[in-house]
Image 1 (tube, rainbow, N blue to C red):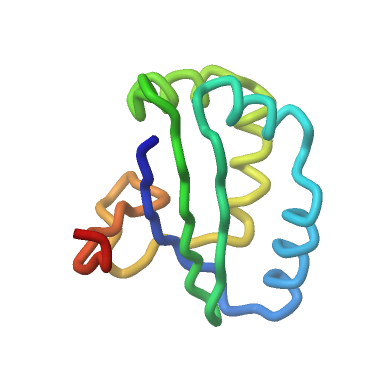
Image 2 (cartoon, rainbow, N blue to C red; image 1 turned 90 degrees about the vertical axis):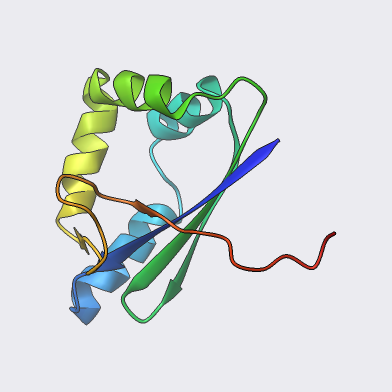
Length: 111
């Protein structure tokens, strides 16, 4: 299993944040099927203010590049991503053209 941690910001609007959270209480079944079908074992999104933190655990053989290509060519995934972008914005450290920015691990209690 591999773990990826990513960050993204929400627009600073309480109504938009509430709607974003509501939509994530039960994501579209096509989205969860897409995630599972491409090797995502678990995904969690945490929020502090407008900052989102995603933890994504993937199985052996997961390819971020293949996942991105499959996501880009799936109309339902693109519909979901377009909807989500109403609420989201890049962090100040996100590279141009990126959405979720990869975070660097700086500590682990495990040896």
